Length: 253
Ligand SMILES: Nc1ncnc2c1ncn2[C@@H]1O[C@H](COP(=O)(O)OP(=O)(O)OP(=O)(O)O)[C@@H](O)[C@H]1O
Image 1 (cartoon, helix red, strand yellow):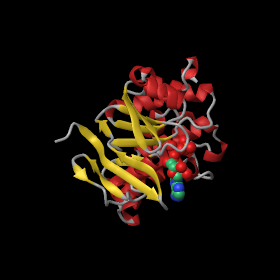
Image 2: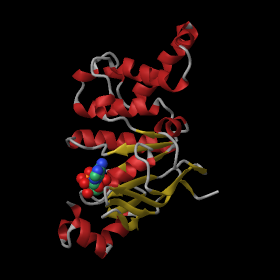
Image 3: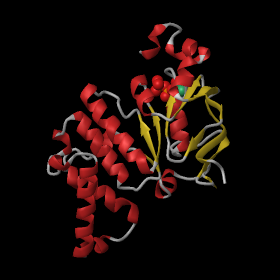
Image 4: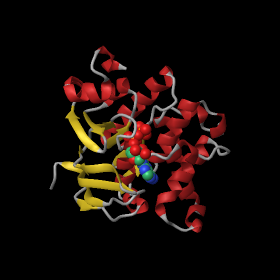
């Protein structure tokens, strides 16, 4: 058994003659928060899309929990616990926070509609939805329509709907995008909390967030891994400083 819950070997993706991801060997350890960073166009999103099966690799392999998932579908890998956080648009704006979470809870079972008519099951579903809302600090927003929630709270709701699928590995695509300081602090706490009993892999541009949250950071550049390690290690790496963070003191940018 590998020491990694998720790993890629020589992962490669060509787009019409252009190599967006080029022989990437990524290893994500169970129970860690792992960040994928790099300049614009480095291949982070493509890597993410390959791992979550939204794109098929041109070559290479992806293994999750000891299984080769290179040819799996997003649905299959999600069912097995490798779950990508929904984009914010996938939260239904005109449903309440509670309804959004309940809907997410109903999704993975594949059980018939009639099953949900059983009052005992509905009660249990309700209970779990409340638990999840409370876990992400949204108890007071239970009956608020998603469209009326502040941006940072919407992202928390998105995380709650992802947690409903009981991920073992949660993939977050720029969780802090578009957020102000207060929301960043709140969502950072939330990520740390949800990572206590699962693995998190995230693409994130905000280096302060990456420094605060990540156990391991992989730096991509032009589709290849440039460096990997703790924040201290990668931020000291001269190649990283030159290629990504700038050479001088602006490394904290
Ligand atoms: N569907 C596609 N067709 C052609 N080229 C693509 C496609 N998707 C991505 N690319 C190219 O692959 C390269 C890597 O893009 P990708 O979006 O993975 O980078 P990124 O590191 O996520 O960048 P950013 O930080 O800007 O989101 C870019 O040059 C991009 O233009």
